[in-house]
Image (cartoon, rainbow over all chains, first blue to last red; front, side, top):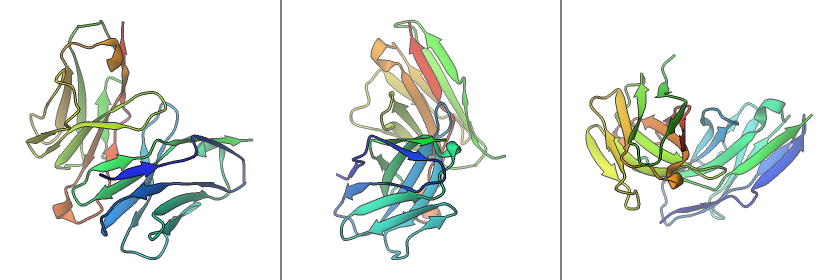
Length: 113
Length: 116
């Protein structure tokens, strides 16, 4: 079974600074997909960024980028120029073929003005 | 905009009184999921549908049932809610992997269920 571990239950960052959220996973599969989801307080969970395991290039979406280290089974999220609206729970998630997501325990990020 | 819609946003029911949560989607996705999320925890998958094929997670209590009358709608029925069932319930949809790999799930806003 796959497991996803987010070792930082809570983090904080000053507005405009950069923060990195860590995620590690365990799998015996070679083809899989990784996601970061953002869940603001009392709001919808939305997809932030995704990465295909067969792609070596790290995914980037505007201020969000990942550092995907397949051999180390690590998938960290970097948020640059943090904004107050980035305050949320962030979930790392793993998916192999079949659409089922395995979530990490989440990291609560607080962006401070 | 196409989306996943959950009604109501907040639901209060009495201990032991059946309750139904609803989810609809305009994305025309063939896979629909129900998750239970307790405070500050990751969502826990309860069950999912591939079209009309129902798939129950092994540890989902029998108290939880689901119906999917058509592509657009999916319901979560809790037959006899207990205090431990108070949680956020999330509905999600996706295309299945036959549409290509890496089909992300799209989530609704959730229904927060309280038990009195």
